[in-house]
Amino acid sequence: MTIPSCITTYLKATGRMHVATLCLMFLFPSSPAVAAERTSDDYLTGYVASILERDLHWGKDSYILHIVNGVATITLFKEDPMRKEAADEQLRSLDGVQEVTVVVKPQNAGKPEAVSSFIGITDDGKAFPTGDLFRPLIADPKQPQFFVSFDSFKTLHKRYTLASVGFGETFGLYRFFGNHEGDGLQLSVEGALFAQFNLDTASADLQNADYTIGLPLTYRYGDNSLRFRVYHQSSHLGDELLLGANPPERVNLSFEAVELIYSREWHEYRVYGGGEYLIHKDPADLKPASAHWGVEYRGSKPLFWNGRPVVGVDMKSLEEHDWEIDTSVKAGFEFGHPNPGQRRLRLLAEFYSGYDPHGQFYKNKVEYFGLGVSLGF
Image (tube, rainbow, N blue to C red):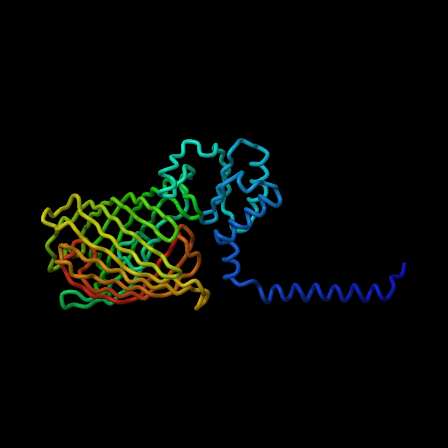
């Protein structure tokens, strides 16, 4: 059978249009910024709610939805296996949704309403949550994280190249969800190692290593967040330093401390302040109090290779040093996901002036500047 020429012409034209469309899709893919926006918690919350109410015909008041770092938790007020199965089937394949959990709890069961309304916490929660409710501090030299930096380091009228490395992370144990998306109360455990190496020596001598472990309790209510932390630190000098020609006098620095920091966010800016107190210390004559404050900027729009600008100024003032101010400044670009608990990379220029924040050298005044890379998980 012969196909009419008009139909043949139409099919050829249609084929060309499809090929052209495919070429345009490959040449001009959606930007990473748009893709990231479509997998943000706010976007996913609205999208998932529309599926539940429009496609599955759920009533708005028949469930509670929380999405934090792509993890969706749906609370039903009565047992309904068919609804749970339908929700799980519909949502697990969505881009950006990392996990779906459906729980059943009677409405207001066991909820202390007066306390809940005051602090904004519900009795709904999740074990081993992703991320944290208190954003890690950008410029704090002792923020538990994975990083490496190379600095021109000056102390005691000497200048040399110093490599600093850190291995650390905060692991969520349990999170109580708040009345609003992103709010809540979380208990975590954290651990970190901070070490410094003198690269101007033949074997890149280890100078000092600080070990910390703690239990942070973090809280968020809208743009306000708190971190209350009890932690331990012990410090150890490097073997090469102790075996050198002029070894320093060893100090058995070890202490436990309690810390409280309040943070307030406003658009892309953040200010924070608080302090800590040593509850047990060695040497015994260490003065216990210190103040800690700072300001940060986190850009939301990519400027360089899809990197967002970030700046942090962190200041500490210790009673041990007669309340002189130690200043740390870091600025650069952040790539990847901005939220804690998601993969990201930061390239930062850094500057520090004040007493050495590293362990047994706490009596020395230092100054350094250089470049660093930090990773987030």
